[in-house]
Image (cartoon, rainbow, N blue to C red; front, side, top):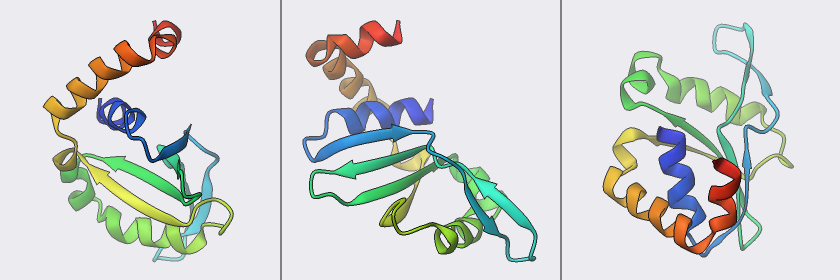
Length: 118
């Protein structure tokens, strides 16, 4: 549901040019030296051309898994052509009411998207 909330809120923003869901994995080395890979939830391209790799996680998992540190390792290994920066979004930043309103707006203004999703 977090990804859906984010997507709805992003689709109604006028500064968004493109949204790529589940882009290719980024391979990186963890702090302990082991190899790993991470798939971002989205890569968002702004109208300015800036690309932002978005990771969406519940806040409690971010803390429990020290995900901020892991995401730093991912960002360090991320190719420059993939995205200009990384952004972590948690459930604390995704207001349910705002997301529901955005979903209603998407249904009214972009019916072709809701037909595909149905």
